[in-house]
Image (cartoon, rainbow, N blue to C red; front, side):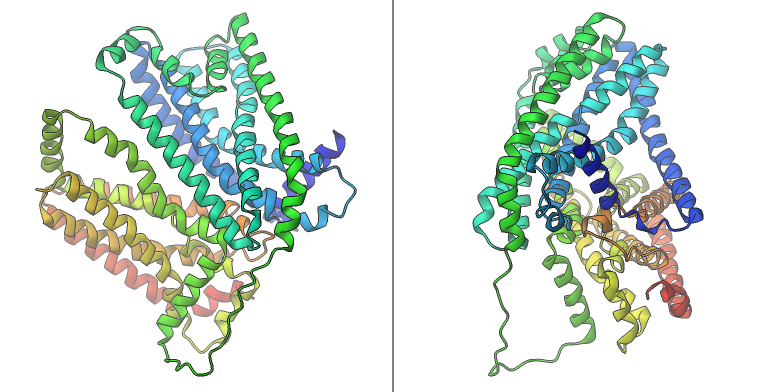
Length: 549
């Protein structure tokens, strides 16, 4: 047990790449920055929780919000574990060092699973802790509630992490016949994502089959909706019951059930994974891409422009590395589709009168400044998942200094590096516009054109802003590709900038009654901002690029 704990500590420190804290001052600055980041995110979660719980208390359905939060954490945790487990279990650099050591495979597996569980605790701290604090405050609950909440929060992530890791390990074992590390990662993630989408699709259909009479009966019974969703997940019911019955023996009983479930699945899952883990990672470690490019001497090669060659290089770097592809490219493409599935199904199941009423309501609000603001807010939130520009320098690692030695203006190189991010962001913009047009065919084409134009200006501005942030604070020292995105403090600045932009647009929009005037103001503002950023980069090239060595 001591060896497993020690190995967990070593692997976790290695995964966080904590080598930069050579100066106490730098370490203190990062700690303060992380505290501010946590306070900011927890404040948003706390505010949403306050509004939601406050509105549910009068109808005695406040526990529904707790239930939905834990279900949401379950879903997010599974998706996060899919990506994390691939890197930590199979493609981390420490595997080559661990395999020759006389360490029992199950101890290696347990240590790596512990790292995955710890990463889930970070998510729980950001989302569940503020929810529990607000819930206890509004209902005036005593300290026992918070103690029980902490205990169940520590136990809750264990089961989904282990089950997801077992699934990933089995998939990796089945795809082990492919001696190509990159292809294995692509196939494994694709299969898992398909399973997640299918499960979400089935659950949405299942929930839509509930009749209005059943829904009314559940609402009449206090917290009746909790029973509906809890039965689908073995850890949800004891978790919620432990919290709701915090002041009686039922809570202790449910904590015991949750503890036994978690420990049994943890031990059994570790044994299952360890049985096939060593052989799988050994094969993957020795597996190489046998595809060798050959130069055709008889082929005529056409000279390409600098722009085309540079942008192609950036795209190749993104697609060649599966971790970068999964972290930077896939989220901005898949998340809009995944999130729109339940909305689309719910819309299709509405009665014709309700659909017509909904369409009329959307049309009335769409062709107004408020409609443009809402569209831009949705698109901007999708832009948050695009990390291409924000990691464009960091991804190059030690090769980033290549930018300084080629005869291309650094300001132009910034444009070339953000071009993949700009092009990729066009996909969700077009997706949203097409979705609006399909749902509401008679919508005015003008609002769609305005949405596209302003979205593209926001797109260009955001990508320029993100590459400046990466230039100012590049993460050039990293052990695994996973750290470039998941352990990059620059993510905080992207969220803040987009939220500030959206807030400013909202404040301007609510004071303007003309859609045309609002569109002109937004467009001119972003055009000027883009010009100023380009001018700033051009005049301060040496200063901006001095951190690339």
